[in-house]
Amino acid sequence: MFNILTELGLSQYDIFILTVSPILGLIGAFTHAFFIDENWAESPSLEYTEQTAKEEKKTRLTTHSKNRRGYWIGSRLILGLVVGFAIALFFIGSINETATAVSKILLIALIGGFSSHKILNYLNSGDVSKIVSILKEKV
Image (cartoon, helix red, strand yellow):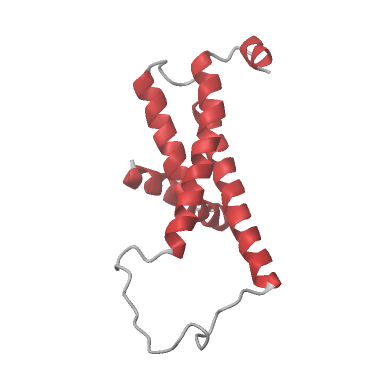
């Protein structure tokens, strides 16, 4: 596989960016999904109850809600993967082959994965200038 990419004229830096950027986009999307589930602004409160364990009401997830949740997380991960890959394609062949340049691209891929839902919304609306402003704010 790597022989084919080197025959196409891609350097080792380009191949590295092509393989690692989508993974970092996926990690960024997963991290954002994790942050949505938790309220990080407040510390968890302690709850005291007079009820015994048998009397406590338990919340149960239905199969439908579990499936919807799985599709939601899966779609976010795939979207982060796609954004990371798109960022890698954007920079292939146009960077200085230094560790600094590669690390900046990988950081953009991670942030792109974290913001992938916003990027998709702006692409659907047709306003690409907002995407550039989001990336400039984050980096």
